[in-house]
Image 1 (cartoon, rainbow, N blue to C red):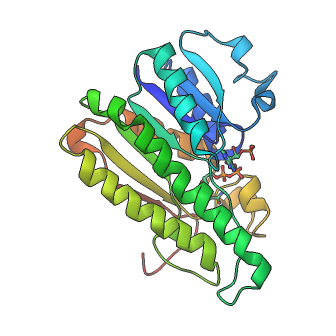
Image 2 (cartoon, rainbow, N blue to C red):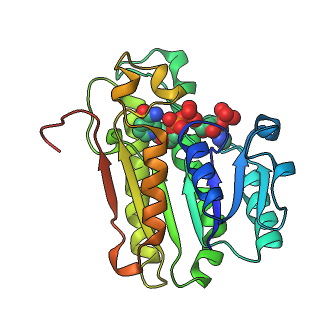
Length: 237
Ligand SMILES: NC(=O)c1ccc[n+]([C@@H]2O[C@H](COP(=O)([O-])OP(=O)(O)OC[C@H]3O[C@@H](n4cnc5c(N)ncnc54)[C@H](OP(=O)(O)O)[C@@H]3O)[C@@H](O)[C@H]2O)c1
């Protein structure tokens, strides 16, 4: 069984992954901004074994919270061999943005890029101890191609993809394998706020959870670096 950190587990894709991996018996450490969000759900700490399940406060904009979360997880589980980065935000910022939009761009940078970077950095020495650690990152198709006018979101996801490539390079010898999952629309709160694309035709969060579960079964020699998940045809990808 793996000892897994999942960020952004309060909702959406992160929550679906947490539920799936909990059922499979992994050790789970969930990072959320408000722990109360999980009260009276299957992810409520009171409903789970404290030796293999914990929920910790984590805010990607606060680097200290990442360190505290990692330390508390190692104190409880003895190690960490997997990180699944799901915390992320969307902002619509045009290329020619207004002066007051700069805050949105800075927030995207902090949450979507520096958040996963700092969390990975803080957990790296523990991942390195395992000979088959995994890092799964929810990037996006917006990290592979720039479509329309999503200047800031796409910038953050391209930067995140570049970080994934460096993590792969730096972790290869120690058996750390990295996968960048790149979906188009996934049926969560985030997509609901952006598009009118029919929810039933979107990729479902449970499908991403199944992909993650399968990834964790693969040996070092077979882990794909990138998985593009399309719910509509993209002719150039
Ligand atoms: N949905 C899509 O169509 C889609 C497509 C491609 C990629 N993605 C990516 O997949 C990831 C998950 O997206 P989703 O669809 O599950 O989004 P979501 O339903 O909006 O959930 C976002 C998650 O991120 C957390 N989060 C936001 N800001 C945070 C912060 N400062 N610190 C810690 N956690 C924070 C949220 O916590 P709170 O509950 O506290 O807000 C929530 O758990 C994101 O990186 C997103 O960019 C999504």
